[in-house]
Image 1 (tube, helix red, strand yellow):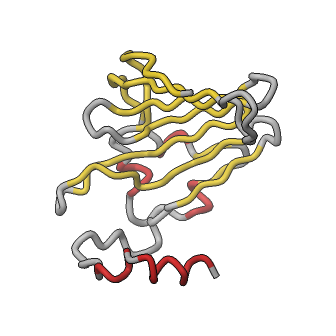
Image 2 (cartoon, rainbow, N blue to C red):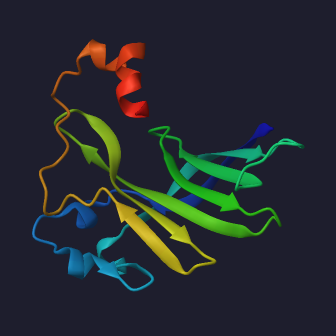
Length: 153
């Protein structure tokens, strides 16, 4: 069951240019328990709150999920995931910035916190890699049913 809770203001990851800056090593960025707060940026934004609750009789690792969508980009900026006892278990953040050459607002990294295990996973760090290549054309054949069999194997 899903529902639109409404709109509110909250601090979300936004304009994360410090996290995207060249020359920042992963050892400067990734710290025990959290990312380096000196490189992170949060701004007060309007978000739409969408809640999903597991239907009775269905199984899933989460009993409830709450998504916070940035009103400007419609990207999910933050997501909270609850265990079967209704306790907050995992939370995730998409640290966004503007890619002016496209133009699009997109995340430069995503971080997933497991509050029970006291660990986290960060993905998308591109400080030491080539940035996204938005200009490449996708081959329509990559989206056919036959192409799906390649990924299922």
